[in-house]
Length: 278
Image (cartoon, rainbow, N blue to C red):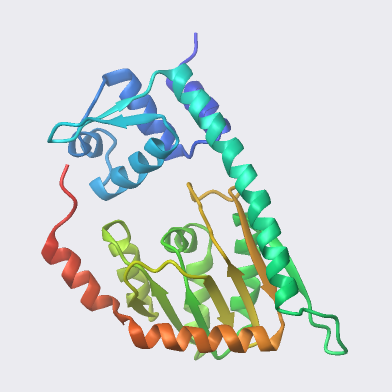
């Protein structure tokens, strides 16, 4: 007879994160629940529940109630798995579109071989992204500037990026970060601030995500639609050591930096507003 651990393992192999699998199984076994009860039962924070449940709703595996307070119910297993399959198929189609966009983008930027060995390549997964980021952080010695999506903070904490950033700061490096800061990432942003990063908030940012290392190399992405922070998660990003492009991105960053506000100010505003209600 199958047990919970085997069922969880199968859900994870189907494409869910461990937290998503645990929450979905809990709703299947015990019925609809409010976020506060889910947080208590799963021994975690409500912010964590909100992130996980939002991801499951997007996958079609959980449904919120229409009445208030909101409770969440698991979608029937067959329907949920079919929805998850369709979502993954849609993601792969989207990857194909992003690949074409990046290829066109590289042509417009006039990347070319030269005596200085200018190169570029497409990054196709979070695992590859982490590897490239660690290498660039470890080889940088002056300044890193970046405009990043929310999931980068979780990825940095999970896969050793924060440790590399600490060493970079300890050897005199400066890192400046722009992000659209929301309730779910307050704690992670505060940890980054405590570590010595300079962070600012840009409200409702919808532009290009990128990072520039010592104004020499860069990673950029037209769109990074990551549903779970897992190494096998597909993404499409462009890495290059083209100096002209690095300088262009660095200049763009400075314009955004001037228009943004300190992360501490944004966090105070969010705390005054209060956490999202169930």
